[in-house]
Image (cartoon, rainbow, N blue to C red):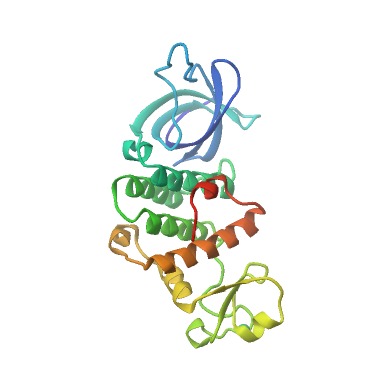
Length: 250
Ligand SMILES: [Zn+2]
């Protein structure tokens, strides 16, 4: 069985026994993996120096099992634990939201370097930079784009009218994107979004990570984009995210 080394972010963990945990990582080279981590659990009696923390960047070694999706973690060397996140609840839940999104939207053993890079860069940006709200929106949109889930939002999915020419913009996940007023009247469900918010969301999909710290967006527009993304993500996943309970949009 091969022993493999890769960069990894810890996404989640569940107890397996008194001293073992199952830790889910998103890795640069192997995508999402589940590992059995024996002796990595931090006990209340004697703290394990090997304990793996969530939302933390490691260089890991693991034994790849052939006939099961549960591999064996043998080493996790800390690269960055983003200490500022641990002292700022809002930043922490935004980072937790990213981890949940990656966990829910990716499948096992399907590597995607662009997503890994933007995940690591955004974790760092939320931790040390300003504009955590815009950075999370940017991550959500980029992740949807990279994984092929980005909806059509530059024009009406039905009649192809551009959003600049619409009197009202509606977003309908069942129809796969934006609808103009006329086409919206023939459909059920959907939410109203301002054309300005839709245009900015569309532009964010094309912004480079290096430029995101210079992007400013009005708070009311951020709220609209976040509401739209939650509506869309919830309909793709068929459920909401736990971290949303701690990140109110209003
Ligand atoms: Zn239309």
